[in-house]
Length: 339
Ligand SMILES: [Zn+2]
Ligand SMILES: [Zn+2]
Image 1 (cartoon, rainbow, N blue to C red):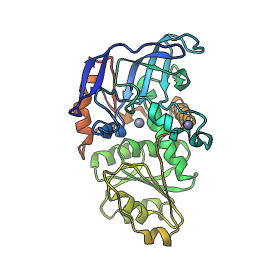
Image 2 (image 1 turned 90 degrees about the vertical axis):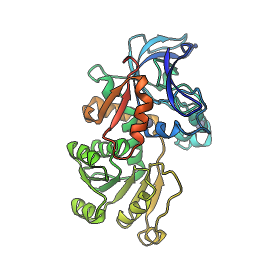
Image 3 (image 1 turned 60 degrees about the horizontal axis):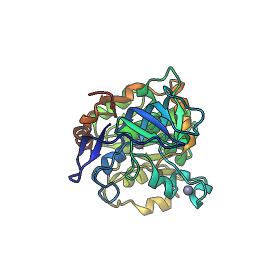
């Protein structure tokens, strides 16, 4: 099969690999779409985590090609969205309700360095990861399940409810999915902040308020009618956590979901005087993944969020584009069936 492989020079090239082997208790998928995630962009250059030869991609939707011995409930032709984390179920994190942070999950997750990901024509996965895609949902729409689940995870960490005001820093793919996750949870007073005019326009086209970084405090307070109850950091910019602490209202919550390139600074005096809570958000849980697919099936997520569907061979150049500030792409999907 063809797959996108990370080279020693940290580029992505299409190579002919041996087809994955269908073991008992596993399911073979033809990959129909695999989303390019912000984390993939970083993993391409992370030599410590991703060895040369690895196949990235964890936002996987496909069609079942074959099922191994002992697998019940799935048959060739089934259309599926695959969650990516295989947790152990017994460690301290798993039993504390944080299975998405299980050390085994991080090691065995699809496409995060050690296990083959979805940037390939085929993949073999444990059936426990699979969710059926309803007939009326397209593969493009279904490929938004994992990104929306990441948004739902950020919203869950924010502990916001309908009626709360929320500011999102960064209107890229994660910021957009956070805004949509807030909307499907009935939280409508949402403003996105982004210096990229294309991203502000795209957010506005989805019906969200979007403001520039200039005079941001005034702009955010104006559209929300006050200081935000929560600020969700989704830009990964080094100054963004400092801005979040500045913008959020008294007793508010700051959720950090971006991955800045270096340690960040914020004004602790503001955290103290406003009694803020700062919390991280990583990955998503299996229930959040299932909830996301339900919202997509209910037509609550516009497929326009997908800006490009490209071939495997286009991955490397697209990674470069997505890493350049000011780019005009939103969610980009690989389609291994496109040559
Ligand atoms: Zn992702
Ligand atoms: Zn575990």
